[in-house]
Each structure stands twice: as C-alpha cells, then as structure tokens.
Length: 79
Image (cartoon, rainbow, N blue to C red; front, side, top):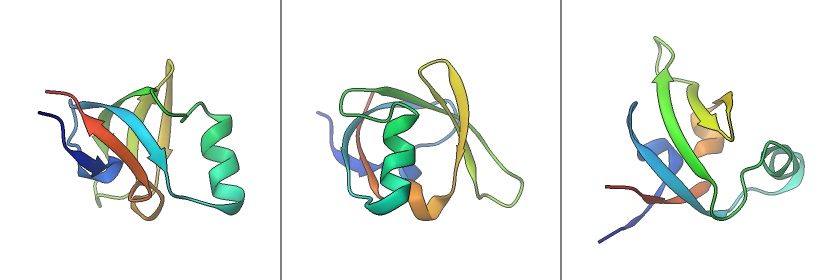
C-alpha cells in the first residue's frame, strides 16, 4: 500500500509520484513551471555531499531542490 510522504523522504534510486504541492508564492510557480504537477513521476538520483540539495529526475531534466522546498511536495511512494 502506498503512503503519503514528502519528496525529501525518498532516497537516491527511489521513485515517487507527486500527490500535492503545499508550497505557495514564487517557489510554487517555479515548481509548477518545471512540471511538478499531480501525477508526475519523480526519481531521486542523488544528494549533495552535505545532504542538501537533492537532485531529482523530473520529466527528463535533472533538477536540484532544497530540503526546505522538497518537504512541501507531497508524494506517493512507488514500491
């Protein structure tokens, strides 16, 4: 069974589907512009040496997202 978690909770190599964006303002607009809408498949492909930001494969592009922002992206984990 899938459980609701935030994007920051997945580890490199794991994939998830976007469920909801809880962000607002300009960061919400940026996330929507890169294609983070409900139903989008996202794969975590790595983290920086310090752990923040993380790199995600989103619609064929690698995007770095800070932990502060990725905790506001709700997902359904893929098992």
